[in-house]
Image (cartoon, rainbow, N blue to C red; front, side):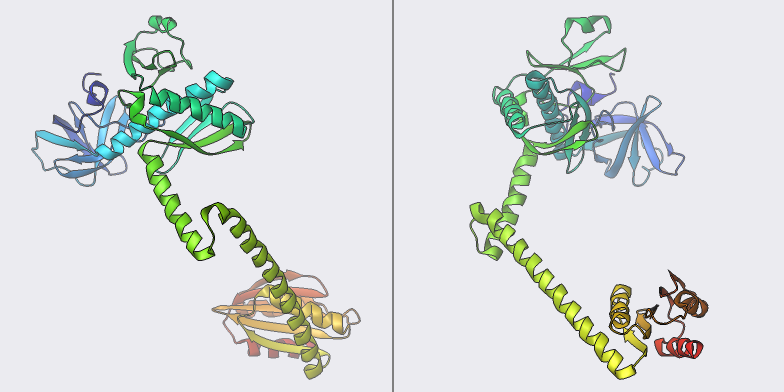
Length: 394
């Protein structure tokens, strides 16, 4: 553990080290192994640190077969011996805040309601824990959040202890440790005792605050989304910006925003319904007009009509006159859509009719004796394929 400087001092910003080796992995990505490092590798739900080594950007840090690999965008010059590493401190401290906050929140859930944490994810924008319960109420969330922030405000120390497996019995661990040697405990006295290999601040006060943002049931567990420290300030700023923009657009105060949005959505649904009814009436009018113009055989070409609209129009035509037969074609970009339909008093097979022309456009289709549709490449014009269909009908 002596070469893992992040365990000796989580607050370290820069360090020097010697290159032990530099090579490519199986995927052809360059990495270096150092005799010591302050870069935390991905593990335990916490992402890796970033930064630079001799000005080269680190894109990943992984511990593989006991070695910590520092993946670089490009290799360091040959013959490089001693190097300087510089940690991306904002990212490191964010991870310290979030990880310590997770310990506090998980312990609060267990203290108050005996809900154990069985999963943890720390992402760039998302921070979650999975609780071993199938239900979580708003009242429970408020109580847990209150306790967690009280622990933060008390500014309790966050202690690190290395213990043996035999010494574990001295501590009331929140969960059983997975490792059997080099066991690292993260301790908030009289509140939380937990085996953990992540980076943490020295006191709970540095977490600053915890806010539960949302929760949802997933199978037999509940996933809780939350934020800690500087992330809360960032989220508040982002949400406030959105809220202020909405107050201007909707001409409503912040407290009346929910009502204003509901009213807007209700109006939108009403307008959508009215528009759909208007479209239906227009299609009915169009169906009658096509019948009046072409009598029983209605053949028409279109531009940019959806297959759904063609189907609806064809059904309206044959419903208006059960002795009619409809063939529609529409070119949409590089696609050609076809619809064939017949009224109840006719006997032509629409599925066979459309199947006979689909090879001309490398198309596919389906349907039944009275109604069929298909589509393919626009290798011929809509008018040409209509002429072919009319010839086959006659």
